[in-house]
Image (cartoon, rainbow, N blue to C red):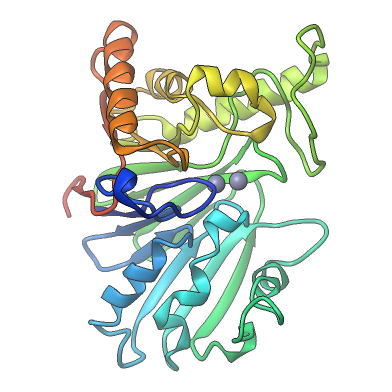
Length: 310
Ligand SMILES: [Zn+2]
Ligand SMILES: [Zn+2]
């Protein structure tokens, strides 16, 4: 199984000299099995370059097939889709998966972002065959030779974590999520951080505990866990209601799950290359005490990993 990172940034693209090494594009990771199943997780702006690369192969002649798993439909996870070249070539097949919502179906959410006057090409002008599959929390299914499992995450309007197993290897993708401790996010907007003295209800505690257990189970024995580590501890204290985690949260999940490697991911837009280096170094230092066997890397555009047999 081969994993390639095409976009590692959260919130919005931030090109420029401060982000040259890790990259400024938003969330997109490609997973390919040895048998040739191609899965793309999230369609942030990183998917644009992936699309260009795919057009050098069978997608150019309209014979390509890809499966796109969307964690949630915040801009930084879908904004690259209108610039994904295989989408506009007849014959290509694109299967799009995301969590089912009560209020809107997946197709209408994705077509909204390219409706006039936001974009010149409406969704129905896509010439590829596009099929949608809406998922429930805890869904478990196969895409050819790849087994996919899902879990609910703690994020405004709710996001989905995915684990993919193939070729004797497993990768888990967890973006975006807050820790499972201070706020329970659902479909409603949370305007500010909870007051220091407010306590979560027993029911919310229980829901968060169950959610965390399911995320740990999803990551169990994973060779690679890609995790939202957007915040430093100080940033988290200021904006816990934004729905993102700290590196220590990711390390704890990996420890409990017995995962082998953690990739820090969804870097904050203001985090420069040297600051990501520093965050990686401090995370490694702290994890050495609690989780000595865990390898930690920071995701960057172009990071290419081979797991298991293929
Ligand atoms: Zn995000
Ligand atoms: Zn989000």
